[in-house]
Image 1 (cartoon, rainbow, N blue to C red):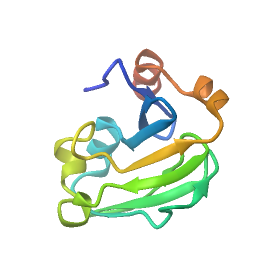
Image 2 (image 1 turned 180 degrees about the vertical axis):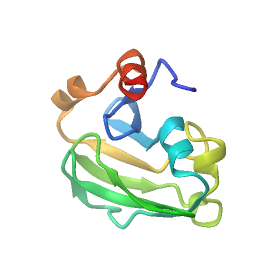
Image 3 (image 1 turned 120 degrees about the horizontal axis):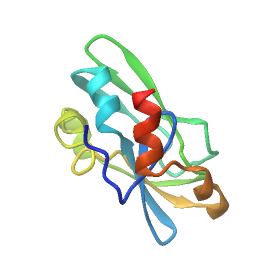
Length: 126
C-alpha cells in the first residue's frame, strides 16, 4: 500500500499536499483500489468556496459512484482537466498525475485535524 509520508490524509480517503496556502487534493491509493477502474471524475465546484467535509465532486468507477469530500475549507482554484480525457490516471498515478483539485486554504487551523501517514495506515488496516 502506497502511503507517502509527506502528505496528509482524511478519514474519507483523500490526500492533501500543502504548499503555502494552496493544497493539492486527490484520492488515496487505497481508495482507488477499492473503487476499481475509474471512468469519470466530476468536479463542478471550480471557483466555489467549499466547506471542510462537504462534497466537492464525485468519481465514477465501473461499478459505483463515490462522493469526494473537501479536506479543508477553501476555494477550488484549479481542476485537473487531464482527468476529463484520462480518468484512469487516478488509478495508475493517484499521488501524481491523478490529482483532482487545487484549493486556496481559507482556515489553516483545520490542517491540524488531518491524519499523518501513520494514522491513515492504522485507519485502513482497522
